[in-house]
Image 1 (cartoon, rainbow, N blue to C red):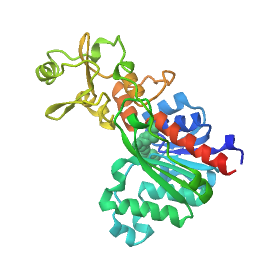
Image 2: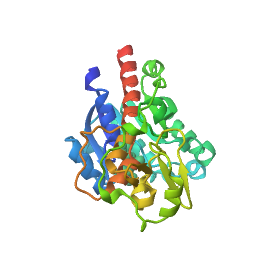
Image 3: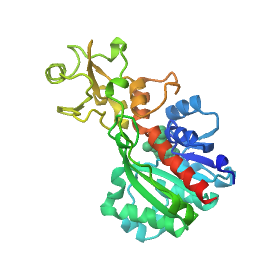
Length: 317
Ligand SMILES: C[S@@+](CC[C@H](N)C(=O)[O-])C[C@H]1O[C@@H](n2cnc3c(N)ncnc32)[C@H](O)[C@@H]1O
């Protein structure tokens, strides 16, 4: 296997944040799977490899190209330890086990999994125990760590995610280390546009306008409306972008600039995830774009972890 030819299948691909980070680190994506139509539009606007638009449950492993790595930020679905003890049949329907179904058939050398920080504590730690057990019983050696985007890249977003990396080869696993904390993130001003269309601004008719004008007093600070109150982020970073930004205007983080109070634009949200300016937006509703970037990953963190995997592989081979 050539180091520069390590092939990947991108599961739960979303708009391709994991794909982009892996590609930048030198991995070669062969195919992807995603069921959300709007996400698939964005994905295929930016990548040319094969994209299966369907539920992962519908993928037939016999028809899939073999790859060296399976990657995916899978939705964290509850599977109780009680169900697990009853045997595989009770947990088969859950998405993590769909990944295992593909692992059993494709037998990849590496797995690159990403999830919310809380996965480790979900169901009192039992879910995570099951995940580790399932990987280890298939012969994988596993390392995992929670990384915060603003500490491991220059992107000013508070986003803590767990990264689970599994290796068939123990020596490669031993050689792999998660990236070191990076020195400094960019200021918020580096992300914000100077000129933004009028429709992103709030006015007297907007909900909670009087509270916002009273409380939003600082520039280069990101605020967030939290149901009944305004939260100011005091750490000079953007709060975690979430998928529900697409479900109602006031879930989108807010800023004050020279023209007034406004929502972040989808392009600014993309920058807060470390997507480059060249990343193309298809002509779909802004609400869909907000949801997609909230659901995505911080590309430079994926890239940093992926480069360390590449380093470990090269060291051992
Ligand atoms: C957390 S997001 C992953 C985002 C992706 N890593 C990115 O960079 O954009 C999870 C994705 O899984 C997709 N998904 C959920 N259930 C699925 C299923 N049964 N089959 C295929 N995709 C699914 C969702 O539509 C969503 O885009």
